[in-house]
Length: 229
Image (cartoon, rainbow, N blue to C red):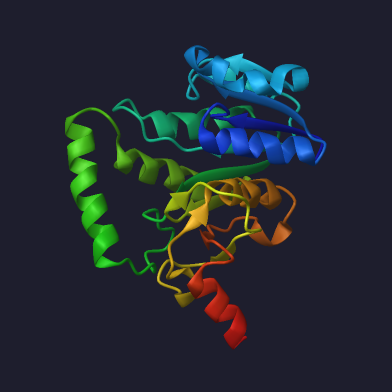
């Protein structure tokens, strides 16, 4: 892993991933909207950014050229198939052997075996229709996007994040194959550690074609699981 592209590099998660990639000595390129370039000023000349929408095939193709790995923030913004368009652009442009790691929430399910709390189901059930009506976001398009990933023959990983919070790193999050696993009960991860898990997945062969649901390694449910083991 020498060169990595971050699709959605200007967001909070994208900036944390940039920090982790640079710390590992990777050459970093990225894609973000031109109006968000100022958020990346602290990285100065250490990264290369291609301004544009993350579903713009030409912009994405330029950014991922020669990259060994691509980290993609699957944002469900708008009503124009933004997330699925981003996935199509990444898969079309990435090298055949590139590691493709995507971020999304727990609400995505690969095999329908996830067990969701009443609270999470209520949030998704209420927020989804309201966001679509206001043309703000389309959670259904995230489902379409991840279905494209699951059906592809690429070396993919879909990292499903719990509720996020700011704070100093607690370490690499724990993960489970399905939401509902007791180790995930605390439903809390530091945003920087979500980014750390994404970057670590680039070189973790055990996560190829896996959709891990993650949770902070120092949360009560993770600690309880560790103590029991």
